Structures are given as structure tokens and as C-alpha cells.
Length: 510
Image (tube, rainbow, N blue to C red; front, side):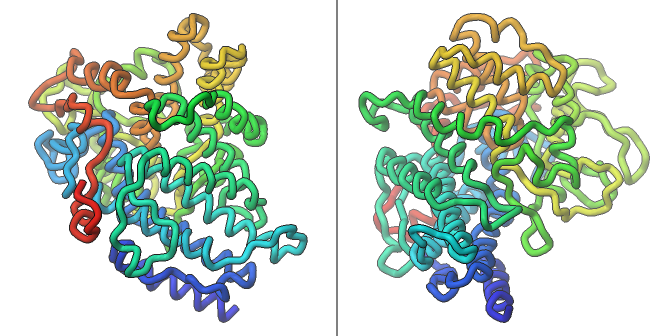
């Protein structure tokens, strides 16, 4: 017990620092830390705590990926399209010195560093039988899973990145970028190791083995449409993706009510959740404070994220009665500070116009506090990184590419939950189904950080023709209200290496 308390105190001390990966001391990199299941589980919480922190999924990564997806704008810094985040990341023109970009990079590598410590320090058992052995193996497997997940984020966001696989030391500060193909090879190796070791013994609040299957399916889907130089010749990545995704089918289930997924209390660790990061008093996500619309609850919140009008309109025009609309966005509500009605696009009193930035966009609701009776701006509401509805949409997309006849069944399961009959596009040819399923990801997962990746996964032409141009040419577009999306392929498809990395790593110059 004393050891566990000591570990937790060490984790809290490390969490209080703001140093980069290169500056952080080795995180619990001692084989004695991992010699009992209790100690190993405590150390594992420390690994996941970095993902919950403000600079990663707690705030900065959310701002970075949602704004730079092409779907959003922010009022952080002022109610205008001219604030820094809007003229840079929301306009698809990210800068190396960007706050969210730099913080996200640092925290991703910090998470990887802690996973590296566990992988290096803990000893796996070849044929585990005892509970102690099973738990320690599960911890090691989850460390491989976390490292793979985070390098998957890095390689998609930045392309070539330093491939750090050992605990931090002065000798590893300077490291050149590795080719994208090499990074993917390491990611796949790590996921396969995770599949071998993860067994669910750690218990509730951590991912089970099927999370690794879903991750590997996502990786193969990404490689299926990647440039030829990234792929291995002759490999059917769609088939590999199907082989992994189908392992997860039927193991989880959809929560009957879509809205409950984002309820402050009902939505945590449901049967739909496949990988969910835990928010607690020790390590709390900043979502309620940052992303709940101002005055939606009585606590002081900011409502920093808004959704572009044409993205909302596409959802509403495709499925006018979709309950996902009410759960995802909010345009009008009674303000808790004065009882007056707050109204924004499309529910605005001046008709169809959008005269200013403040009322020109619906708020993104689902990731903040959805309970108007709440008085808290720090909550224990978790955040889902993988959920079963996404897995079903993946299987639908994969099956359409393979033309195996299963695609309509998977998307029907997702739409049944919200009382929608699949539209005609799903009964057409392969191309019409492909276009429809890519939009279905948008409607189902808006605001859950997948948009950045799905919008770019099918290449620059898809991103340009389906996100960028429709935004810039929308009938609702107003230059004094909206941001203009950049169209330069080099600028919009990947992020620049942060200045901090360039300044501290002599082998990188962007």
C-alpha cells in the first residue's frame, strides 16, 4: 500500500510540471515499480493521465483537431473571425508557433515517453497463469497500445516524425524524423504486441483487447488510401482492415439512446465504449469549462467551439429529424444567469441572415456539460476515443470497398438507433455508398476529433472537393463572419513541426 501511495504522489508531482518530453525525467522507469500488479496498475494510470491533461485531449488537442478539420471556428480570444485561432488553424493555415499545435505535440510525446518507460521496465510473462502475471502483462500490452495510438496520431497529423522508442536520455534529445512508412511499420508492430498481451485483467476504465483490433483496423484503412510509397506492394489493406474490425463486431453494443452517450453521468463507460479516457478529480478533462456554451449552465463556462454553418446545414438537410442534431449542436437555450433566450444560427430572430460572428454558428454541445442544471465546470464526464458506432461505420465502409454485400447492414444498425431509414445513396453503386458513408462519419462523430483524420484520409482531392470548396462557396458564407479555408495542399494536409521541437532538436528544421 505504501508503494502505491508513493507512486501516486510521484505521478501527481510529475503532472504538475509543464516541461517537454526532452526535459521530463524518466517516468517511473524502474523494474521495481512494475513488480506487483498494484504498482503496475498505478503506473498505468500515470500513462493515461497525460492524455487527459489540458495540453492533450483535455483541451489543446480538441481545439487543434476540431478547428483544423474544416468543421469549426472558435470565439476564444473574441467574437470575431479575426482571432488568432481562426485566421490560422480554423482557416487551415497552421503555424509552427501555434499554441495548440505545440502543446499537443509535447503531450503526445510525453505520453509516448511514459509508455516507453513501462515497455522497457516491466517484465512480461510468456505463459501467464497467476493474476499478478496477467495484470502485469495487460499493463505492458496497454503500454504498447498507447504508444501505437499516439504514433498513429502523430504520423497522420505531421507525417514524418522522430520515432522515439526508448526512455528519455540526453543521448536521445536530438533525433531525426523517420519516414512515414517506417513509422507505420512500428505502429503495426506495437499494435500486434498489444493484441498479444492485452487481456482485460486491469479492469474497468482501461481498454480491453478489442480496442487494439479496432486500432489496427483504422491503421489498415488509412494505409488503403495512402500514397503508394507508404504502402507495401500487393497488400490488400481493405481486407486486412476487415479481418481486424470483424473481431470487434458483436462484442459491444449501441447505447439505445444516442443522447445518453454524452450525458454527464449516464455516458461513462457504457457498452458502446471501446476506448475511453477517464476524467477524475486527480486528472480532469477541461471540456465542461472550455466547451459548454456560456451561460448554458450556472458555472462560468466559455463555449469556445462552434460548428460551421454549412456543416450543420448538411446534417440538417440530409436528416431533418435526426436526434443526433439535438445532441450534437445547440442554437437556442435559456441562459442560466438571467433567464433570457440565447439564440444563434439557424435559430435566429432576424431570419436566414448571419449578421455577426457571435450569432452566426451553432455551438458544439456534446463534449461539454449537457446538463443545464449543473453548477460544475470541472466534471467526471469521460471522453470516448473509440466507440462501437464508429466500428460499425468502419465495417460499412470497408465492406463497400470489398463489395462483400455486408455494407448496408452495418450502416442500418447505426441509423436504426436514431429512427432513420438509410437513404437512397446507400442502395446505389459503390461510389454513392462511399460518399454517403464518409458523410455518415461526420454526422455520427462530429466533435469527437475523428473529423480531422476522416476528412484527409482519402487524400487532398477529397478534402478539397468535399470540405474546403463547399465551405468557401456555401450560400451562407459571409467574409465578415466566416473564415476562408486555404487550398494549398502542403499547408492543409499536414501540420508543421512545432518551433519548440525545431529549437531543441538539432536534427530537425521542419
